[in-house]
Length: 419
Image (cartoon, rainbow, N blue to C red; front, side, top):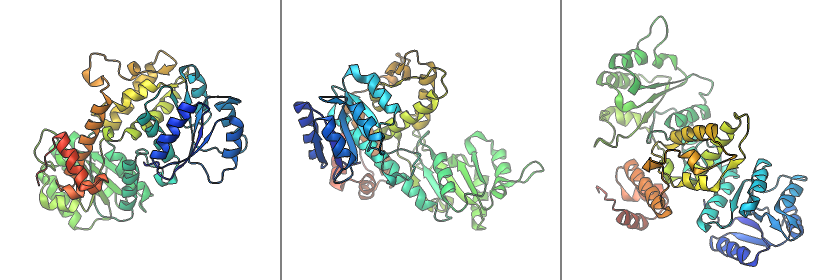
């Protein structure tokens, strides 16, 4: 998400801090209106010449507080997304503002890259272009939702590829809900959990107790997870079934085996070509830091609502630790860790130790930011190359960078292409 051409209101009376923020935002291409008092800001934000995309506001102002400004705006309209900047002594006030509807807060001193990421994320979250994506607010999540929407407009088989926990089943359900089959049945089956005989029986054989899934989902959607576990018999039956032009929409999920050299798990070529009529790839969570924070806050709100004594918020350190973690289990792992953290937290605010309680687990130790960036870029590049069968130009398009930039990054990260 770029800040180019975004209109930002900056409310900060400190000359050094305000100047630094304004200069960096302008370098990012944003249009900045810098105000130094609550009174001036109230009038400018309430009746702007052009609607502001976001407000960056200090908690302490010469003629009041950022809270006074925000509440005054709320009395008469829906204010733009607010990102509050506060010292450690103002965290409780900032958390209170988050519960009142503010978008986010940062404590001083903060890293400028972190600031830009937070600001970009909350602006994206406020844009209608997201289309209520369940995957996040990053450009990759927005593109994914657009891809799912396009897939829902036709009835061809869909092949969804992604690592464990990335949400392939969620993507399948999203396609079903966005399609004209929404009122029809949706059924899913995980072939990795079935014996060879059960696979064929559940998919194709009717019994007195239940119809076969391929028949039970007529005029609806059948999602087959872990298609790479399909037996030869089931692959033959699927091919015959698809040739019969069924009224069921078929969606298959494939999880790459990192220990295998087979790129599609041994699914026979003629069937694979039919299954991949629509090809969709879900990038790993580690390559989408904006979505880590977005999902983290959603999980926090949901799990916190179950607590008898509610927590007051997420600490900045906890969020930083989450962004710096590799998330091998992707969104599923994040949900699990957040559920445990919120339910077992002893303090009023979540800290890194709540999210990663096992100090002996090296995978839970936050990495240096440079390592995080390299790891995220490496994961995204490898995933794009796999998705495009190692074609550099197509991978560059998928990553929204030039071919030259991709080559440079691959050289830096020691990634070799087969082409």
